[in-house]
Image 1 (cartoon, rainbow, N blue to C red):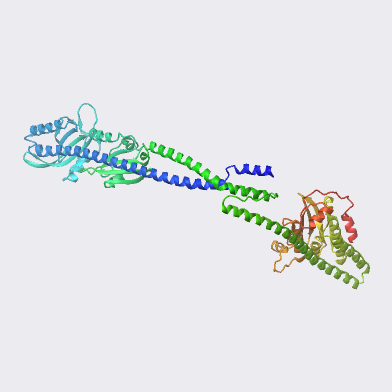
Image 2: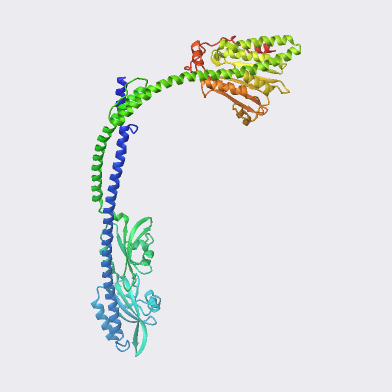
Length: 632
C-alpha cells in the first residue's frame, strides 16, 4: 500500500492539468497573465497612440512649412510675370520699342536667373515676338498646340501653372534639354499702336521645386512626400520615373480630391495615413504619406522595455501562484490520495485535515464509503435474484409454447391411428423433455442442445410427412462449449411453420455451428418464402405491429435469455430476403463446459473466455446421414 501511495504522490507532482494543484495554478496564472497582458497592451497602446500622433503632428508641420516655401517660390514667379507684363509689355510698342522690351526682359531674367529657364512673348497666332535669353526658336514646335498656350486662351483671366515637362521651344546650341514648369497668361500688347492679344510664357526651372521636395523626403523612415496638381497629375514624386514608365503607381487622383487634413486610406493592400496641404494660387496638393509600418519605426526600444517588464512580472506571478496553489491544494491532494487507495481496493484511512471545509468533506466521504459498501452488497444480492427470476420467467414462456404444438401433433396422429409414429414421437418427446429439465440447470452443453434440436426436428418431420429435409453441419470443436438450453427449438419451429410449411417444393432447413474469434455461431437457415428487411428488423422487437412473417414470441424470448446471461453484445440476428429464405444466427461466447463455469454462468457472471477443454470425437454428434435416417 505504501508503495502505491508513494507512486501516486510522485504522479501528482507532475504538472498536469487534471491535478487540483495544477488547475489552481493554471487558473491563477491565466487570470494574472490576462490582467498583465491587458495592462501591457493598454499601456503600449497609449504610448503607441501618443507616438503616432507625434509623428502625424510633426509631418503636418513639415508639410505646412514646405507648402509655405513652395508658395513663396511660386509667388516670386508670379511677381516676375507681373513685372514683365505691367512694366515691360504694357509700357512699350513691340514694333517701335523692341529694344526697350528686350532690355527690360533681360534685366528681369538676370535678377531671377537661378529660378528661371526662359521668358517669351507670343502673339495671338503663336509667333514669337520676344524672348530672353536670346536664342533661336526651333522650327518644328507648333506653339498654338502647346498645352500651356491652349490653357492660357481657355481661361484668360488667370495665370496657369503646367506640370513638369521638357522645354522643346528653343535651341541654345548645347543640345541639352531642361525640365521646366510653365507659367502662362494672356497679355494685352501694342504693335504699331494697335492693341493685340498675346501670351506671356515664363518657364521656371523644375530643379528649384525638386530641391525643396528632396529636402523634406530625407527622413528615410518609410514616409514620403509628393506634389500633384488639382487633377492628380504628378509634379514631383520620389518614384516619378517608375510611375511615368508604368512600373509604379500612386493614389494621386484621390489625393487631389481631398481637402486639407489627415486621412486614412488603403492603397495596394497597405494601410497608410495621408496628410494633404493645398498650395495657394495653383490648386496643387502637397501630400505626405505615412505607412502604418513607419509608426513602428523607432519604437523598438519601447517594445523591448515592455517585453522585459512583462517577462519580469510573469516570473513574479508564476512564483506567487505556485506558493498559493500548493497551500490550497495540499490537503485536497492528500484527501484524493486516500480516496484513490480506497477505489483501488484498499481500505486506507480517509485523510481528514486542512481547512474546515476539507475536514468536513473527509468525514462525509468516510461515511459515504461505509454506506456504499453496505448498499453494494445488497444490490449484488438483489441483482442475482432478479436475473434468476427473469430467466425462470422466460423459460416458463418457452416450455408451454412448445408443449402445446407438440401435443397437438401427437393428438392428430393418434386420431389418425398412426400409433407407431405417435409412439416414436412420444419417445422423442421424452428424450426432449429429459434434456429440457436437465436437473433444473439453465446451462447445458451445445452437444445436448443439438440433440434436443434433433429430437424436435424428428417429431416435426413425422408431423409434416417429410415435407422438408434437414441437415446438420457442426464443427466438433464447439460441442463441449456452454449454452443456454432451449435456444434452437423456437428458431426451428419458426423455420418450419413460417418458412417451409407452405412451400410446394421440398423445403430445406440447415443447422450449422462453428467457432469464430472466440464466439460460437449457431445458424438456422431455410429456403422458405422469407420476408422484407423491414419485417426482419421487427422480428426481435416487441413491436405492437402485426408480424406477417412468423411469430416473434419464441425468438424474442431466446434473444432476451442470451443477452441477460452473456451480455448485450450477444444474441440473435435475423437476415432474410423475400422468396430467398431466412437465416437466424445465434452468437454466444465460447466458454468450455465445466461444473465451475456452469455455476458461474447460472449466477449471472461471465467467466474468462477459454478454449474448449475437449474436442469431441467424430462420433459424438450424429452426422447428416444419421439425422436423415432417424428423421425419416
